[in-house]
Length: 124
Image (cartoon, rainbow, N blue to C red; front, side, top):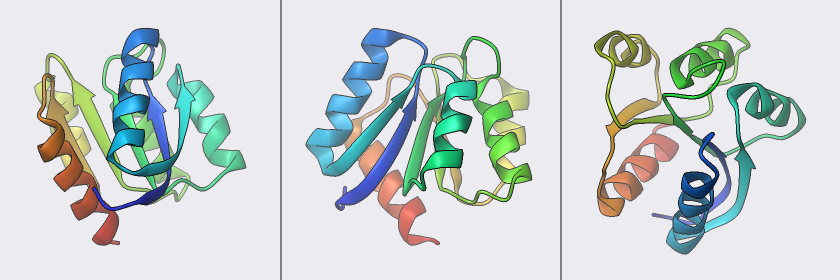
């Protein structure tokens, strides 16, 4: 992954959140902001511009695709990858309607994730 100034990671499982943050930092993210819910992430997005967002699909409260739709409805075009351990066909279809979005199943290979982040960030 090319060096990315700032990434927002949205994950409600504390262990997974820390693991994703460490992996993204190891791949070259200069700054990783952690949110444990979509609602918290929306607050961060209003305060700071992120280069990239990585969100889990299944979150307490608003899910990852609802979060993506909310971002886009507010005019935010930050590239997003939605992660899911059990992809929901409707969620995948909803996410696919937006530009600069990818959907990854868990588990995933870090090389594939890194390549997808590079592709999405440079597509803008």
